[in-house]
Amino acid sequence: MNVADSEVVASILSPYYFITDSLYEADLILLNTCSVRDNAEQRIRKRLRELVSLKKKNKNLLIGLLGCMAERIKEQLLDEEKILDFIAGPDAYRALPELIEKASLGVVSFNVHLSEEETYDDIDPVRYASNGVSAFISIMRGCNNFCSYCVVPYTRGRERSRDPKTILSEAQTLFEKGFREVTLLGQNVNSYCWKTTEKNIDFAELTEQIALISPLLRVRYATSHPKDISDKLLLNMAKYPNVCHYIHLPVQSGSNAVLKKMNRIYTREYYLERIRKIKEILPHCALSTDVIAGFCGETEQDHQDTLALMREVGYEYAFMFKYSVREGTIAAEKFEDDVSEELKIKRLEEIIALQQQLSLESNKKDIGKTVTVLVEGVSKRSDKHLFGRNPQNKVCVFPKKNYKIGDYVEVKILSCTAGTLIEQ
Image (cartoon, rainbow, N blue to C red; front, side, top):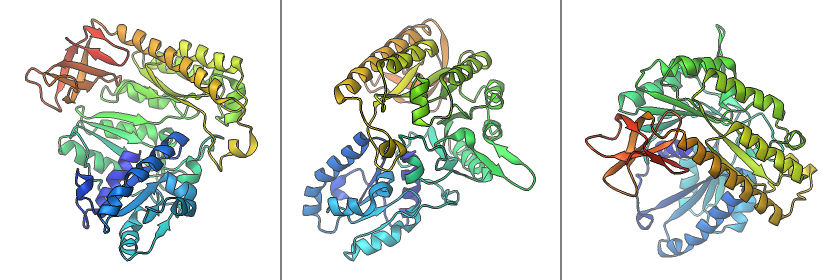
């Protein structure tokens, strides 16, 4: 989502600046931030310290901080990080030219206003770091779920969906420019809803309309909330081969007690029922998830319940983290962070080790199969090989031959690692 936001920012500032690959040439440096976990914020603070020397060498250099971290700690951030000239929250990107102008006059300022309407749907993002094949399309902003550990509803505001006409237009334009894959983005894409006097368009219908642009345009999406993923969406995914059979369905914990404390709304049993339905309708669908280790009050049995759920589902991959307290959240205000750091690390290591095993087992099942891969680029390890992903979002590496970036290629899998399918 930060990539998509950065592309919007690049578009807004394109009349005033062009993008350079060199920090030493830059007159303006923007850091787009995430506040979901403390680790992300600490990386930003480290990066700001690294930029001090550049600021000393170039007195005209302006440095701004964007996104959720700016929204979360506002004036405190400007007090603590003197290198910053301005900050802008996720809904204030249109104000950047004004903030930059003030900064150029020596006025340190911020805009962290949260909007109930802003979706940036009239802005054509600048795909400045794109491979020319895959692109992100933001279909909605904000979140209404208020999971007890999460800052997103406070830093990105409440849910609001974007006009489907602008989404379809963006997808059509991308396809005409040669892009062959779009990923629809939202904090909870399944709750997308555009209301008109005639009808309401939900996420399943939106996905179908984008799939109909061309069978050569792959459609992915992220992220799904288990409480909202519908049979209607799954049936549409089965109906249209270009809607990739891959679902990221965050579980966070396999324990009902922890899920309740997290305010995740669903139970372990409900989540597994949704998994069974996915596998029934989409038998070849790949699944990934998010898991948090060491949430407030998590017992050893809770942890074992999470490991057991992971084994039962058999995820292809997962994003795994240890819990970190986020100020302003329900968890920070109501619960004690009572799992020791050592135990959090131990449990996280066990989760990671299990997922490595599950990923390898899943990839081994693909050996001998021929899969359709969208070529994305040259392999980092060998310029004689290309890489891309299959519909299940698995990275595949294969001989270059006469293939080009953007081609669809049939690849026979001969070996694998836990993270990659390989044609020798």
